[in-house]
Image 1 (tube, one colour):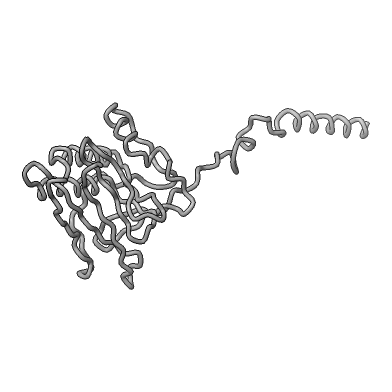
Image 2: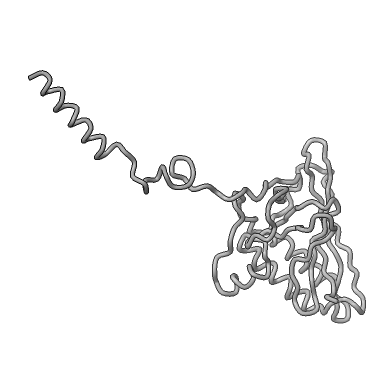
Length: 226
């Protein structure tokens, strides 16, 4: 009688284990990643804040800069179609409001605007239209990036006769909010206008080391497409 009871209990245990304890092939624990969480894409980089209160993004060294979130002409098409803009993996959207001055360290230099308008500059109306394109995608949280390692400048966007580059003198893959870039191009278009033309650059500064103030600079320009 005792052996029969043990056998029955063993059969019940095996039945219960086979019916509920074994994971099915489609259970979450078997689908991509630990604990059922899909593996995420490579993190695009790190968002840092400069002493003037502005944010910038340092792209990871090996990050693929052909990511759709960095294709500005495509982002403009999506904006015009009323569609949401793609985002960079592991990185928050760029600020969608133009930040005010927040200088808590008086040695943080002001941005520098230099007008370079001549007869060979782009049409002022094209510069202003280009600025508005950048502002529009900037309102969607887009980052404008210097993507060309080994080169000083990366072309961001163009409109008819006008184009704009983001230039970084240390050749690093650094991004700034497109809203900030668009406002810089707009300032070139409004303050540097002369006889229907406009051209120039605006240089910004940021600090990678907060305490010791290791300074870097980058600039946004507006020039005529060749």
